[in-house]
Image (cartoon, rainbow, N blue to C red; front, side, top):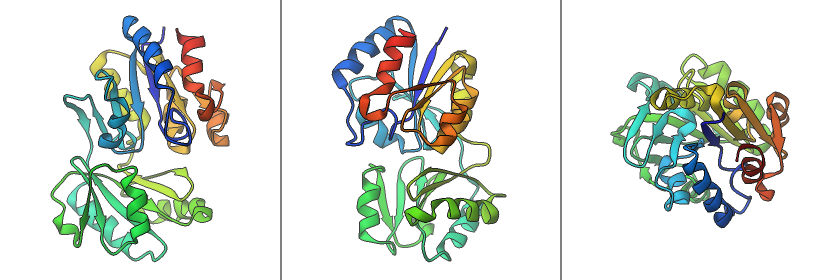
Length: 262
């Protein structure tokens, strides 16, 4: 009996144009509510960004920042932040890497160092709806949840390995591919966030279905009772999934929920 559904956003729930079938989702969501099946977004993105997609659905729960922040619309259920000492060490190291640009994601906002390019800033505003430009890192008065890094697309795997080698003792390095890399607290990932949420709700991981497409979805796909990969998923995700569904552009999440859960 599935009691909770967890859904990644980009490449999974959302079409490539960042839309979804709102009419169909509304019908499905209402049926889930009647069955008391919780609908949860498990994303690497900022809470303030992903929440804008569900303004009409106040009971949606969020596992944001790759598991560092678990919250409802009303309150924070779990939060994991880096120590100030670790933040300084990671910032100092990243600033020495000429090919990397990065921003710092906090509980209240994300922070964009002004020395990076305008193009990177414009891209970042699509994923961070609260984004402040900073000149110095000591301007940040917030709990740091994550570092979000941009690298050349074709060198993503290289930099994942490079960062693991050099920063692995301070953080977990994860990537959804395409030049995007996140540094999060060790042992903090989407599955960890779902487990914490499950403790609050009295729901075990085995009673959850999770949908994903990227490598930052691997842990939750493996650890929930029913891990579902999109047909467009990374081969590593397809390999560990219990089931597959059609692509994000075909709204495979909604199809699977309708046919296999409802």
